[in-house]
Image 1 (cartoon, rainbow, N blue to C red):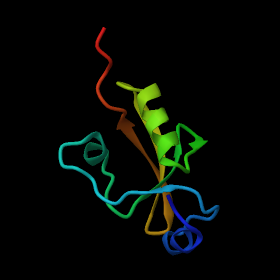
Image 2 (spheres, rainbow, N blue to C red):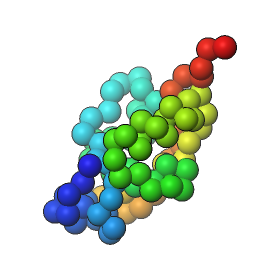
Image 3 (tube, one colour):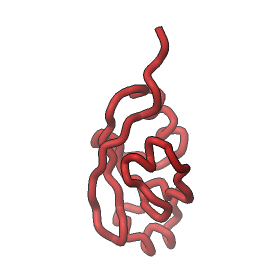
Length: 89
């Protein structure tokens, strides 16, 4: 999670978001083009400010494409990412 100083440094205006510290090779995040230093601010248009919100969103959308709003180099953009593998029936 971001504090006020990190939010300012990364250009996150409302101070809420999740800082990506690392991206594992061959992960859905790597396939989506995410990288360390990006800040995720929204998932499917909804604010995400805590890791528990992130985990909930990933599990709720398992096997589906999700839209992430990301701040990179103080510019906002969006990427699509597969939220893990589909649930087994």
